Amino acid sequence: MPMKYVFVLFILLSVLAPLSMANAQNKVVVIPMFEETTIYVGVAKTGNNYCTQPVAGNHWALQNCVSVAADISGQDGAFTAGAQAQPRFVDNANGTVLDKLTGLIWLKDAACANDIANWPTALLLVVELNSAGTMNSNSCGDLSNKGVHQADWRLPNIKELQSLLNYGDHGAPYISDLAGNGHYLDTPVFSNLVIDSAYWSSTTYGVGVSSITNDDFYDNALRVNFGNGVVDGTGKSTGVEFGVGENVWAVRGPE
Image (tube, rainbow, N blue to C red; front, side, top):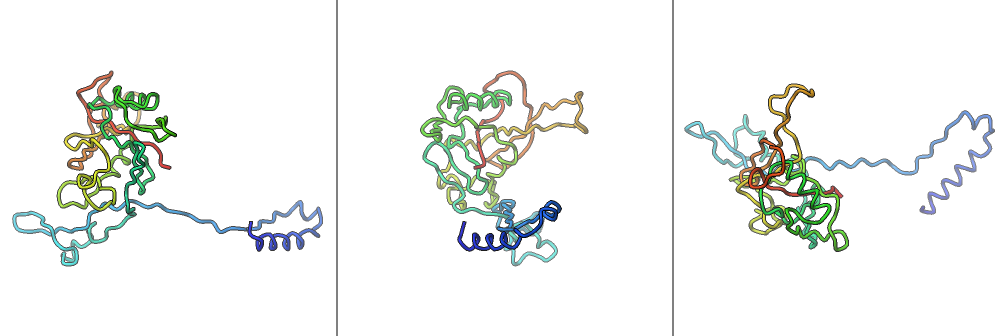
């Protein structure tokens, strides 16, 4: 503790010491030593930095946000609101990648299982990763726990998966490069990232369910396609099954 705080505390105690025991029993003295600080992380930027405007044929075309009509000026690209981290990703050189925006740690190998699988199998693959460092008997390369694998990996929830998407390209969404300002194909962040099919999330999606009861069925889970940015739900299926379903990726943290 700095000397100035010690001195102030000594003076306060010297003043308060003469209080009688009777008075002291009925008083609570609060001495604030430090200011409270609230830190807000904030919602991430989408990466979208362009606007659109109606053109002939009932279409919308790209338009500089400064020139867009006033009645449609409140577009994402005009504000570019949200938190941003550059560099976005850090390759930890131990089989994992840190996302500096969310604090999440991702497996560098985005397709360690080397196969698609149904949802219950995806959950089992993460159990295997935690116990053996493998998925579908394939080494996932995680050496981040002092040379061995971690044991707290999990299937990411839908918001964690979707947080990887950048909507800054004029085409489909994508995952950023290490710097956070380009396409992942230009500067690889993750290895074996699949963009022609989706990835499972751990989030259940109830189709046609109006309330939670024991009689309802929750047969679907949400998924993210990194090739086109689509987020939707699909059937979980049952049992252990490879060759059908979605890709499996693991995350841990945030740290």
